[in-house]
Image 1 (cartoon, rainbow, N blue to C red):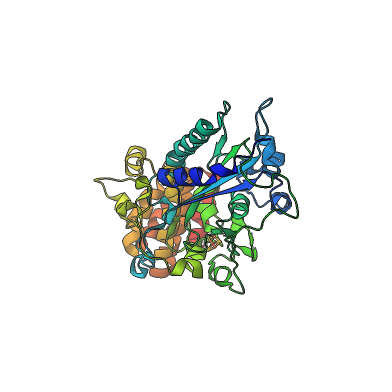
Image 2 (cartoon, rainbow, N blue to C red; image 1 turned 90 degrees about the vertical axis):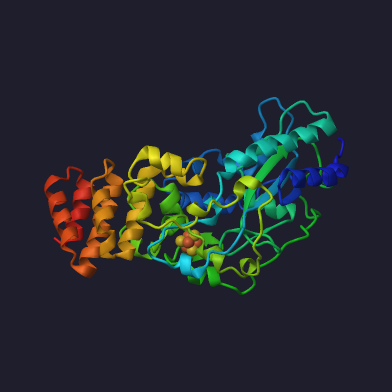
Length: 401
Ligand code: SF4
């Protein structure tokens, strides 16, 4: 069987030209955390992310991802794109009147921009090897344990915060993979002689991420329970956020970076411009004032068209407008200032029950802390007219009745 390992430098150079910060190669074999992941699923950690339960055997062994009759995959090309640009100034990050968005979503949606680049890189390889079948190009779109392959490829290690961490650039990166049938590494088979990746690091005794998590989402080092994680609830979940978790969300309205912000590997980084232009931060998507999206001139939390326009091409669209308004109502409840009452009353009349339930909670917080009569009256009226049982229960609890 031909070995194309001599192509590694050219592929790495081409990956760099396309905008990838990291590129490495690993033989296809059983994923290192396949058993851990199976146990994680069995423990019910996936929550509403039921798509993670599909294709478990393929996730374990990427060779199974080849189409029927196509040559088996022998090499994983792991790729990374660094999106770190600047640290959020504490004055902005800790301002309860602002809604903080996770750094990965400050630019445009990375799926849309990375996928065509993977196809381009695969075409480059095919041009050199003469292959006629396509490689499998995946960016969060297929059953692969990306962090395992980034580790095996030698440019990252998995930290206690469960993030993939690069020794020089920390954890602010997206991962992608291309599976190809060409043998591009010295050893295609799992073996004790498989070379140890060059750039492994370790968390050592550091547990800052575990201690900093406001929701106690870490069961232990390297073990995160998404059902307690702000990122899961504000991005993935379509459901009502558990009441006991809401106060810990603070002003995080889309994702959470806390366990990355405290990581020592991320604390030394300088401001930088991402290699991929589309990843550049839109300043208005970093930490918008919470009340801004309720203003009549451009009510993007209240109207679908305005929301689509405001977040065109952004990952923030994933939970949809009603999911984001849910998150904003929680942040407004944590702010709990009477200036937020009119916005929360507007959300209490939203056509979707999800924001209504959380608006009731937010109004309950303002009522409890400031005895704001407008909040109390709005809740009282909602109690008389609300037809959704879950929302009505939130209203009752907000009124303390
Ligand atoms: Fe905790 Fe936030 Fe990290 Fe989730 S993202 S584990 S909530 S610190």
